[in-house]
Image 1 (cartoon, rainbow, N blue to C red):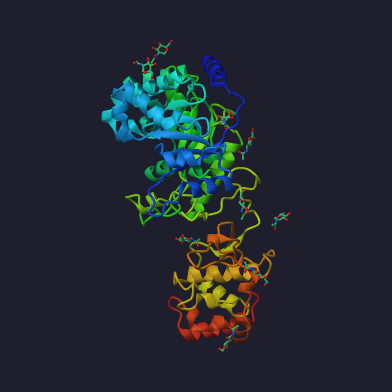
Image 2: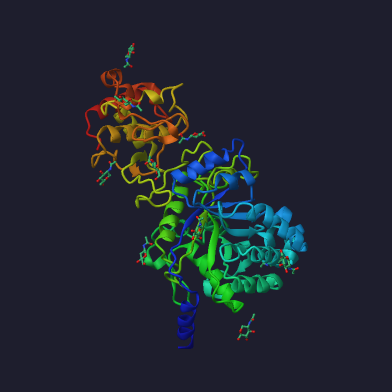
Length: 500
Ligand SMILES: *[C@@H]1O[C@H](CO)[C@@H](O)[C@H](O)[C@H]1NC(C)=O
Ligand SMILES: *[C@@H]1O[C@H](CO)[C@@H](O)[C@H](O)[C@H]1NC(C)=O
Ligand SMILES: *[C@@H]1O[C@H](CO)[C@@H](O)[C@H](O)[C@H]1NC(C)=O
Ligand SMILES: *[C@@H]1O[C@H](CO)[C@@H](O)[C@H](O)[C@H]1NC(C)=O
Ligand SMILES: *[C@@H]1O[C@H](CO)[C@@H](O)[C@H](O)[C@H]1NC(C)=O
Ligand SMILES: *[C@@H]1O[C@H](CO)[C@@H](O)[C@H](O)[C@H]1NC(C)=O
Ligand SMILES: *[C@@H]1O[C@H](CO)[C@@H](O)[C@H](O)[C@H]1NC(C)=O
Ligand SMILES: *[C@@H]1O[C@H](CO)[C@@H](O)[C@H](O)[C@H]1NC(C)=O
Ligand SMILES: *[C@@H]1O[C@H](CO)[C@@H](O)[C@H](O)[C@H]1NC(C)=O
Ligand SMILES: CC(=O)N[C@H]1CO[C@H](CO)[C@@H](O)[C@@H]1O
């Protein structure tokens, strides 16, 4: 009874201001071919991105953002934090140069002071709250404190015991920082900035966290996570981490500070140790995240309380050191071409290029190689698909394996047949996807404008040559152990079979 009452009180104490949640994007700049500030702004405008977080307060970038209506979070880089935290004058000077000089033309709405300071720069932790307070007083002196919020982004790893969320608390070693920090956020009506990475939680869980749970995919009810103390059901890692932050604040008696997620995302490529850093998973995570946030669903603990979120990140950063995934968190290549097209259907919303009509047919992961080879032979032969891009030296020759080639041929057939039902089956080894399988110069039929090159449906129509000679029976498409002769026989057999 007491618990229920407590929860009722908590549910109303995080004030739902009636404001809607927004999606923003982080702008990392470790790129060998960083687009110019004007190009970046053009991309933001084209994609309806109205909230951006800079990792610094770059003057040219802030000037380019002037009079665009885009709301900007600027950052105090970690290497300037000590100086600012130790000197009110240095802080005032920073605010004057990097903020006051740009408002109101540039709509700066927040200052992120440092980044993951407790976990990456613990020696600056003792001055962190001073830095926030000095910056705040400079804003107050310029009467900008109402429109510009001051906070500092934390790694979610400072929250311990985060499942079940109701038992979460901040690493108590940091109480001397977290207690005054939360009081500061409370008294200035600011918010807790939190980085939420279900990707890392999943990777570090040794199989305990199901991939679907990290990706916001539906789980069977038996697999849903239930907090035994609160009976709240968690259907995704993101909500559980945000609620863990709310409970950790509650543990310090703070009930009215909101959470804004400053970084969240999923890498689209990784090395051999990161098998789940894939285009499909990145697309699924970010698409589902955007839908979840913009729906103002809130979290199980605070339903309907918006959790605005900045996606990490706008561009792939090829110069970032470390694992392959480190360089592949971006939504866009530096050219402004999307790395993948998000599965969003609500037209007009942020990043919402409706791709529900853009579907492709691909070979299933783990499908039987012989069935794939047979399907490939059939598509390039009796199926009358133009498989010439698969020939050695042609754009789709690499990667030279049966899955990649079958994917190309299956899709070409599916597109050629007008995507009609049943044309993406190939004895069960093919599957429809919304992720464009095009890669480098190998542009798949059915792509619209992938990588800047708009593809004409007709350019992939089967040529008369390939249809007359059953090109699929040529050894160019032969893989694995099946000898040429058996492939020929198979090919002839297949000619007489309906394959779908
Ligand atoms: C800046 O953003 C705020 C929202 O935080 C909005 O109310 C205000 O109108 C914007 N100002 C300008 C100059 O665009
Ligand atoms: C810091 O400087 C501001 C002006 O920028 C001033 O209003 C404030 O009183 C100073 N605070 C401290 C603690 O010295
Ligand atoms: C808590 O923080 C301290 C100080 O950074 C660190 O040494 C310790 O490992 C952390 N505890 C846990 C359980 O992460
Ligand atoms: C939280 O509030 C309770 C009851 O008012 C009090 O006993 C406890 O010491 C407080 N904890 C902190 C960390 O302030
Ligand atoms: C959107 O929010 C409503 C409640 O406001 C909820 O019933 C629905 O499941 C949510 N949809 C998604 C896709 O999160
Ligand atoms: C996309 O599909 C919808 C219905 O599924 C249809 O109304 C619309 O015309 C299609 N758009 C394009 C560009 O094909
Ligand atoms: C798009 O172009 C980039 C170079 O700008 C290239 O690295 C990438 O592989 C291409 N992607 C696709 C899907 O064509
Ligand atoms: C597509 O083909 C049509 C006619 O075949 C042609 O007029 C048009 O310019 C082509 N578009 C592109 C982008 O190649
Ligand atoms: C068909 O093949 C002939 C000879 O092999 C070649 O000259 C011709 O260009 C080919 N036509 C097409 C459309 O590929
Ligand atoms: C291919 C496509 O539909 N691109 C659109 C994506 O969204 C932006 C902004 O809404 C449009 O300008 C593009 O034309």
